[in-house]
Image (tube, rainbow over all chains, first blue to last red; front, side, top):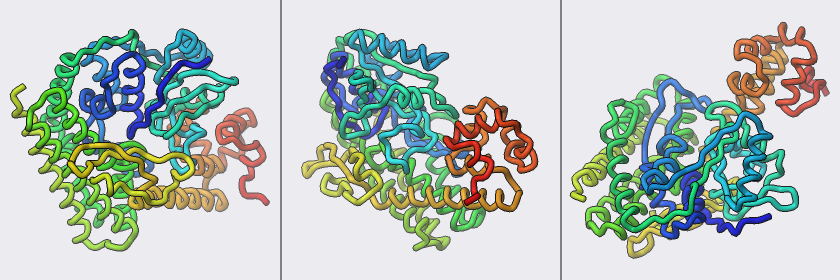
Length: 336
Length: 133
């Protein structure tokens, strides 16, 4: 049994699942950048006290689940979302959906995801994929970060849907409830809402570890790491920063390029020149983030390890904080 | 980043997939392109795995010195922590930490050991004696 489902690869899993499910439900104009921008996905946080893989928890995007939730809400699309108390109930419901011709988004953990390279299979439970059919006993998988479709046996799918640990999925699945009838005007409204909310998140959340303040917070920390932790551990922390910025799924520059693309696409719906100007600033921000990653690599490879090199690393983050602050302020000033 | 600059370095994704990057074309318009990898982030991933191998080795030596139980070793090997062990086995975290003591581990009944063996996907024998030839 197979649903006529189009697999489109994207940079980021939650963007891709949102885009592909919305396309399936009839919204032809949705793209990854639009979903990301309408969902106000751009963010920065260095979560205090929490360690992930023995290094600080950095994130360049908003909390998992919010892009899909916010995008559907802004576009007026009702969503079905369920968690399950048992793998059997989870599979039964999945089969019901597939039999009714409904592909579903699933939250999964990647540790037991057999089609991923072993080196990427950490205990990370906020990955998203789409199940769109069952053939020869195996589930057909459209994982947005993969170039082609893949498949998982029922046991393999159960293991990833019921992975344990932080953010455990508990079989969570979700999909748009009805065929959509989204107009260009709906998209315009959603774009404006998305931009306003993203501006708020990056400029105005009163917490020092979040948004622009968060980038500066990390910049300050970097200056202390070398003395406090030694070059090796400081290097490991920088490697973590680079991985969160560039590894499977940000489209480059910690999602900043996707956001720049969103602003260009937003211009197609709301032709205000400022959107194109600010898009260029986010391209610049993404480029500076990538330069910082090159600097970080020099440090964690042990090639450049002086205090000055750490100061330069910190300097990149301060530079990017300034660029993004001005960019969001420009967005704030737009008269819609 | 320009489309022509999308990195095509070797990475551990080769043979599995290429990734999507967003970049501008010559006229400054955003487009997306495929990347086989970027050396900068490949080396970041290498660092993460180096750290893991160090932790695994440290755990192995602790076990060989009798300072910890095989639970510690396999936990590090499987990239887990006491929270994850607790979530999968059903033991409380404080119990997991006790089980990581060599003296406590020796006295654990097979029923409890089997939970760890199942989680670590090894035989009971290997859990009890991970380093015997």
